[in-house]
Length: 126
Image: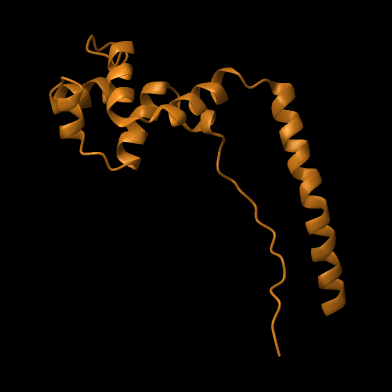
């Protein structure tokens, strides 16, 4: 007898990309850790010392040694992480409330058939 797996409902509670990071600098710091890039080697390729790169990415707003546009270009050149950075910027600055509402509505509409099937399965099992 073969068993056919029933479809499962999947809920994603992960915040949107633009809501997970308060700044591009925080996003780049996350990407360096996520990709498991050797930060010391990356810093050298960006013509920075590891401590300076760390300070630029983790420093306070009042710190004069900040992650700047030249640093971002060096990061992109060395890591080729362009798509991720562009995705973050697009999510943060190009997304409107109307588009967001349309996406959420489309997700909910997509879940309706799954929910109806799950309800029918539960009724059949009862």
